[in-house]
Amino acid sequence: MVTTYTNPTASADTVEHGPMGIRIHVLKGVKEFKDLRAEWDELYKRAAKPHHVFQSHTFLRHWIECYLGDEARLVVICGWLKNQLAMVWPLVIRRKMGVDIV
Image 1: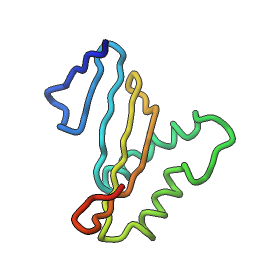
Image 2 (image 1 turned 90 degrees about the vertical axis):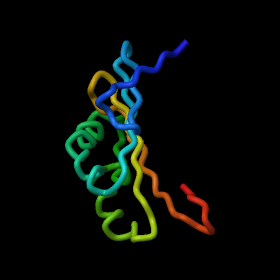
Image 3 (image 1 turned 60 degrees about the horizontal axis):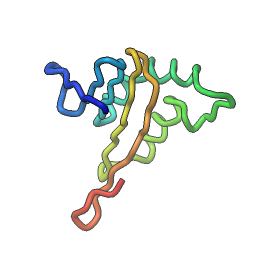
């Protein structure tokens, strides 16, 4: 059975699992993405080889600056294990015909 603990100081976009030291957070927007750079770069160094440039923060930052556009929103689902970034899942959300499309 999984018990979810919510940190009262965390935003509504954060879920924590206290005993395991797991925290999932949804980052919204380019500024929050850019603020994650140091942790993302550390994760990139620890990730399995071979590294793919398309997974690097630098590549994605440039892609965002060139292609994201005003009609789309950036969302990054992040997971920490014992306060160390362990997962990132960048997504782009676009609205078409009244529906958000990921």
